[in-house]
Image 1 (cartoon, helix red, strand yellow):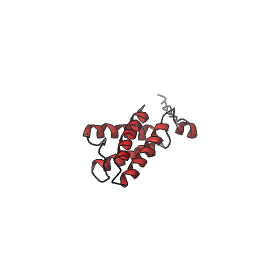
Image 2 (cartoon, rainbow, N blue to C red; image 1 turned 90 degrees about the vertical axis):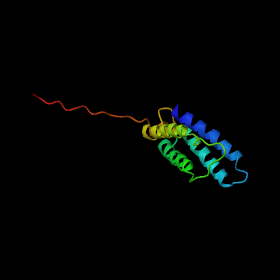
Image 3 (cartoon, rainbow, N blue to C red; image 1 turned 135 degrees about the vertical axis):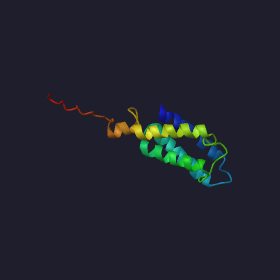
Image 4 (cartoon, rainbow, N blue to C red; image 1 turned 60 degrees about the horizontal axis):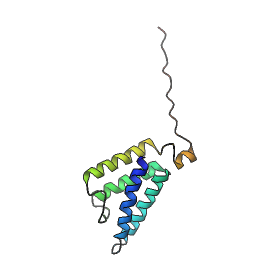
Length: 120
């Protein structure tokens, strides 16, 4: 669910960037890169890498180090905080059971070792 929410928000933003890219060719690059990241997240391929790259890109956009299109998810600071929280959760938790990463690399299994009991 987290992957689909953030990917759909990126697709909306990137479509707006591509529509706004008539006078700035760098917006084509930003739009296609964001669409690629959204695609990677939506199918769950290289999820931690895509989440970290998207988080860095949105922070750089909020700091005006990357170009911003007329419609940006970084206009609202609450939106930026919530988006970064979702991306951090995706980077830490991984892609989930229903993803391409789980099919290719196997599901993540956490094994908790038993504590050694002390004889008294």
